[in-house]
Structure formats: C-alpha cells, structure tokens
Length: 449
Image (cartoon, rainbow, N blue to C red; front, top):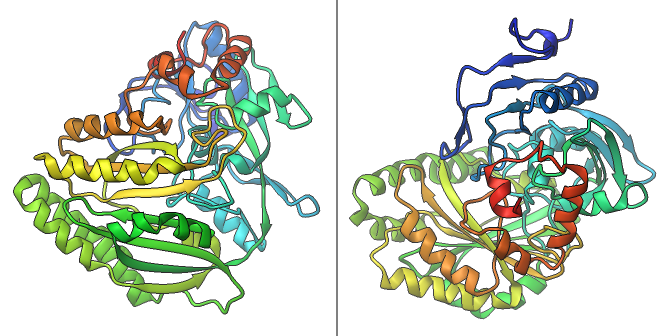
C-alpha cells in the first residue's frame, strides 16, 4: 500500500479529512479544505480530481505556500504534491530536464548541479515547488534571461475532466502558451520540462551605492550586467546593489565566516531583531534604516548559479510587487521615494528592484514588454495597508502589472486592459474548466467568472 492510500476511514482512497486550517508561509491567508489528498502518482492525482468533480467540490493544488495571495486556497479538496517529486529524465542532447511538479526548487537545483547542469536564471529563494513557482510567474533578474516559467519547454496538465494533457510548442500549443503561468486555473500540473545548460560560474559583486546614482545610471547598469538588482532602504538615500555575470573562474565562494556574518547574522538574525524593535516602536525605524543601509559592505564571490542567485530568507514579511515598463522605472522609484518622504509611514524593509526581458507567455508580467519589478515589503505583523495602497496607486499609474502571487487589489477588468492576451487565456479556461472545478475566490476576482 502506498502512503497516499492511507486515508482516514470514510474518505476516498488517497485522501484524508482535513482537521486543521491551511496557512501560507506569511500567515496572511488561511483556508479550511473539506479534505486533503497527497497523491503518490499521476493516476492518483487524476482520480482525486475526478472524485472532487463528482462530489461537487472545488480542487486546488498547493506547494510550499510562498504566495501572499489566496491563489491556492480552497474550501474543497486540497492537493498536496510532496510525493510527486524528483527528476523523471534528463535529455542532454536537447538540453532539457523533466521534473515532477511537487519538486522544491532547492532539490532541483542541487540535483542538477550533481549532474553538471543548471537553469539559466532563477529567483532569489528556492523553497517553492517548481509548479507553484512557475504558475505564479516567479522570477529573478536578468537582462537577457527571463522568469523560471519562460524556461519551460513542456508540461503535463490534469484537466477538470481528468484528462492528462502533454503540452509543448508542438503538442497542444495553445495550452502550452498559457499554462506556463496558469495560476492553477487551467488544471493541475504534474510535470515540467525545463531548458537547462551545462553548469557555469557566476561572479557576484555586491556594493552599496546611492539611490541617486543608481537611478541616474540605471540603464547603463542594466546594459552592462547580465543580472542587475538593487535594494533601496526607505527613509534613506542608500541602496545595496548586486551584479551577477558569467565568469571563467576560478571558483571563489563566500567564506563560511562571511556567509555567517552577511547572510545569517546581518540579513536574518540582526534583521529580525531590528524589525521586531521597529514594529514595537515605529519611531525608531528611520534611524534603524540608516544603520541597516550601512551594515552590508562590498563583497565579491564566484560560485555555481543557485549559490549566487539565491539566499536564505528567514525573516517573515508580506509583500506586494508590480511589474512596470522598464522605461518607467526611474520615474516610478522617484515618485515612490517622494511619497515615503512626504508621509508619516515607517518602513523597515528595503524596496527590491529587478528586471526581465519581454517574453511570450499570455499572463506573464513581462508579456510583450521589457520589464522592471518594484517590490515593497512590510515585516509580518506590522500594519501595511496604508503603505501598500499608496505604492499601488503609483505603480498602477505606470501601467503596472501585479505579481500573481503577491498582494494587490486589482481585478479582471484591470487585467483585461493590462494584458493584450487576457481574453485568449480566459477563453482557454472556459474550454478546459467550464464548471470552474479549479476555481476559488481569488481566481473569480482576477479572471472573472
């Protein structure tokens, strides 16, 4: 008997009655599903979808819960894919790897490295599952290389009818075009085929810089570096910048001492402490921000990609991120800074800025336009509505598209104007899931019904 066949008496095979609320990583979203299913095979997942439809229940798959929206929340059947993990196959001739949908990015990156392979680009954390990360448009920063979803070459999808669809540019191309960032609205992904390449080295250069200089030189910094990003500390004129570029070596990783001081002590341990102080005594935040902006020093290191792109994030927060046309970034940041300076807001988290080239995915935040991302954060438990509302007004004024997995207030009418191919996606949803088996309140808001 498989682990997925040990359900509670009275439930269907492979499922158990849910006795506890599901919560996301940030703790801002909760749901109480009727039952949870942990399938050990695609066949068991397909059976779970069919049984949910027969019972008149909605069904959603949830990964690590790193989305700040209720994209995966359901009061029906919650699919947990943690048994659907691992690499199915590697095709070195075509430069692809096929991986089960529940595989965490961390495990994928480590497994690829052992095989001498790597994704071309990735985000800055790797706790998410591959299906959750791609379905919500998770991205890193890149001049030429785009989001994780843009590296997909094929995928498998269980539809509302229980059919298993193989999708690629050649097979079910209309589904492939949309489902790479599908929000869980088109079906449940069971496997993803990614483009990979021989592992390479990246040299990272982290350096403090003034916000004025970053904004004045932004286009130059973007053009000269394969991966450029920066963090602006509100209440200051200071930034921390990071430039990642391919290197011939030699490998020169962060030392254990430096890694502990910079990544654990300052970026996590001390940052947790100062945020707790700021939450308790908001008046201290501007002074703390000035100290924080000076705490991280310049450093350079060279390592394999996932050890450069990603970093541990142990301090919990809530986040809103918008994608604006790259040409609008400088004006957007200046307006955001002016708003913060004029307000009585107290913001202890830096604003993160990254970029991506245009891609061809229907609901990608970089669909058909070169993009810059502006992410605002607040420490968990700190009131965020005033800050996020004021920031959102600026970001939407610059034709911003919110990240699908991060907090926002936009609805289907807004997205129909923001995405030229929005109607293409919703028409496909009508065909694949006319009864909204995969629906929930979040999808009703952002896609309509």
